[in-house]
Length: 434
Ligand code: URA
Image 1 (cartoon, rainbow, N blue to C red):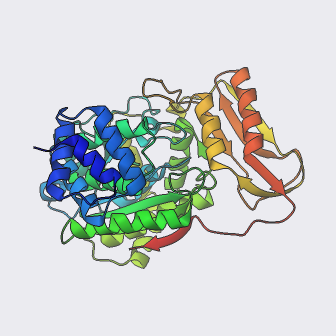
Image 2: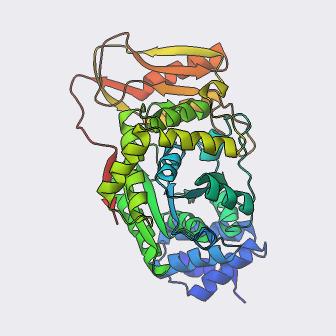
Image 3: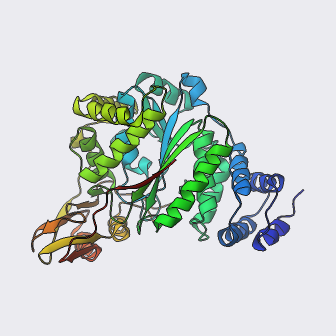
């Protein structure tokens, strides 16, 4: 029997805890036998003292054992590839990646989450599609994967219940941005869902958990180490990608669905298209198709160009009960332009500021109980490095009323920095670590 106070004290003092004691702590917490206040204190001790690689793996393994696991690979008779993003502003990557990868013959079954704070959640975005169902049973998900090749669903209550509880606790105790806690939270969910190969999109910048490339590298190494310790056949690649400005143009649920759809048709913004194709190429190279990343890229581009990815998108949305037409998506009542105050070059479009502007418009939730307005958000037409003239449309606000629109225009003007010199050019994929 563990003494929780003793584990908190030993972690506070920087001691490495044995795997068996960590497992008991996590499993007892998930059975409601350890109170939140003690688990919160332990998380704060981890926040300051960290976890060793062995401890992080023990935590991940215990979280997986707290619930059921899925073996999608065995059920489909295929190697299963999965992707995950650490979360950012305008990040609708999975919604475009899934249909492209599936159109290339590789099934992608994903469990996604909801958004909290300034970052949106994939499920919230999908729910802006009228009729779309995110709650599928495992049997329904498998049938859809066999039939259409893709499914994005909400995380089942029985999969990694310890993480569900712990993440909610971390969210309100300032312990989310701890590298070992993030790594174990994400990897436990991916491994429990049966992924053999995982492409992790680690966002870096002011709109992300990881503010610097060095922090992102540390997180990447911890995720890779968890993949190695999880056993043979588990492959992990980390893409470190830019979140100093929003991804693509659209931020807000229905607006992002439109942009994902444009991208699947080959008409998306350059930075978003690049990230989507890069992730697709790596997922295809990890799959059982037996191809490399270059060939994966060619096949992904072909699926977009010949309409196969778009056809898969339509079949997928219909299979989950939704209407795939962009005309079915909700429109905001008020649209206001955000005009450039001067001539110059866009030096910065602060991702955090844009995310908060969308949140204030009603596109996100501050607390779990808030409801989302799927129609609202912003379109950032001008991105870093773009030349603008005074009066040009930098962005467009989509709001439910005039007052919130006016406030968002002010917030968006503050998010933009227009300068006389061009910022250093960098692509959306900053680094790849595997
Ligand atoms: N996403 C997760 O699922 N868990 C974390 O801890 C952080 C981001």
